[in-house]
Image (cartoon, helix red, strand yellow):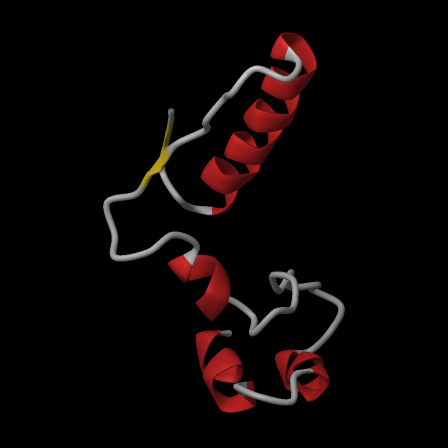
Length: 80
């Protein structure tokens, strides 16, 4: 049982399931993810639109950084 359906919880569930298959072989095994929200991975879906997280480099001006984002430029610039 994994508590939390965020990125770490889902990754942990996948890892646990793979490890269990190695240890118990063909026996039936279930990995269960418990998530308090409506559905798992909600924050992952809204963070970056499929791209990785933004790391601010102090040598790059925010107005230049946002040029690499086709959507959400204004919102991203507002956070910086």
